[in-house]
Image (cartoon, rainbow, N blue to C red; front, side, top):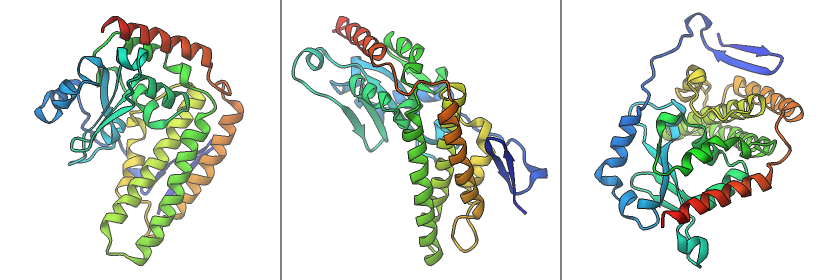
Length: 289
């Protein structure tokens, strides 16, 4: 029988068999493996695209390999930032981002990336929360950005992370209704399980930000809980989400509101300090052109 553990701050974890819960072996991507992927032929566009190439600031890993929730066959998602060129900074050229769908790679321009960071965008802040060994730096400005990543943390993450997590909960409920009516649809079942997993992950990430002031993208500490969700242990036999997930959501929302009221983070980011950082990094970008 499932057991849900509570604390004053909310649900800690769910265990279908508390006596058998143990840390499972996880295959974590190494820096060399990441470098090998980036250096491979399908990623030649990183070296030949005029917006990327010598303008790359850093590349890193995204998705399940970053969260340590990957399974056999999980896609490798490359993410990164490229410094803006002289013509983009001083002229009229524009560049927001480059997407290569074949390799599932997305690289944002620095100025666009900063706009996303200022709004507390989860996908962008996750890149700043990766371990150093999974960030391949191509420019000294990377260290300056990473050293100042806390400038982008404020109570606004309640809405960016928490709001996204809440949407995923509602999506999981909708997918559960579909699965109940179409029990043969295995693809949607997997989507639902992954949606539940990412809902939990986002809540845990925002709790770390609000309570510790830290962006922790790798969720090794929560691996077993997240993989239980991914493996379908929170989906009932009739296709609906289990009541445990609804309990998670209710308790996580309570904890989120508590954290919002008690966090040491400011209400909003210090735009002047962020602007100073952007000016400094853009000057560094101009020096290399």
